[in-house]
Length: 141
Figure: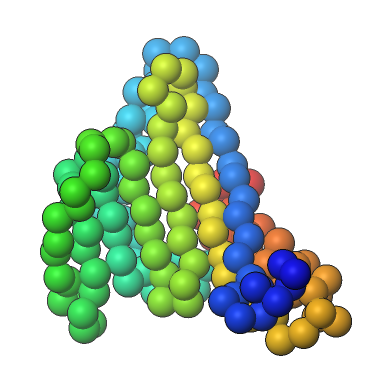
């Protein structure tokens, strides 16, 4: 049963926000957003410390090994204009602009613990709330 898997490995939930801008100026604005995230990545998301940043365009994965010190490793996947931010609580945000329209998508992955079937609805609601909280912290709603 799916609940048994959640109990053993954790309850994961995902969400998505698409930000659309109009025309050429919108496409330029989205590219600027990506440049800004690369040059000034968030240090925290919704009060959680960002401990890993993956940039699939530069092929770099930076993991914080101690406060302010980062270990850099190569990503051996195809080049893509995608950034991922991982928090110390196991949550992540993936940012990816569209290749053919002035749109940027934010994917949210959150994790919670499920102790028993009876807590499924409560945990599910808490994870929905966490996704909404992340959206607000990133000023996406």
